[in-house]
Image 1 (cartoon, rainbow, N blue to C red):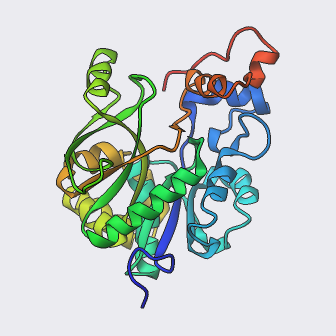
Image 2: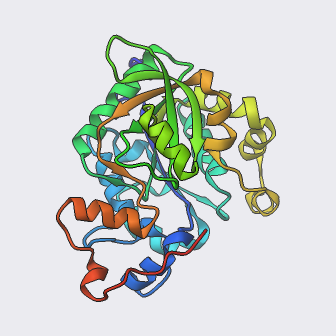
Length: 306
């Protein structure tokens, strides 16, 4: 059996269950319909979801790449996930935030491969340096191999203090290099003055790209949400379960409360969550590109507050 962290044990999990309500005015402008942003091409070409799948090339093969989508998004999702085996497109009845969105595919991967290491990727973010991302994921898998009970998070260097982002506060250095740290705390969407202070103190943006053994992820989840893990693992009627399940966030409910299990790897991958029109425009401006909607109007699409 291959060593943990090698390519034969790494699975990719792509999170595509978000509803994208904040950017609906923009996606309506670009596509004519208020579709979730992961299914939309923001600047022309392929969608954010398709770009995410393409980034996994060289990291994990399609037969070990699992995507989770919502049932009502299937007409959009299936053509964009045609490179994956049909059994690897997991369908949840509705969006219940990132808690169930992470756990359902993690449970499926652990069922198929109990020794699996998982690398989890949101499907609606921007990555400017794909090579740096792939290098960071490989390094994170090696760290998870050496520390099999740990969850390795990729932290992006902040380009500005943004109150709409989540932050990771690094703790002590774990290696002789200056890019791997214990996690001291999380700060989710702090007020601007606090965001400015913690960025000045060395906080990293939380990319929500994480790498760990599947059993370590599930152990961390059981430490906080044992009943939810059990329900997702055993439900024979997922429609009924999701109809009564309260949405909950994986970062705030799990990660923020199990910091002793976490490691953060600083990754220079030019990341942005592209969660607002302003964030997208900042990225495009830094690349010397004009947002396509600017070519047709002098004002950006109105930002909807989630």
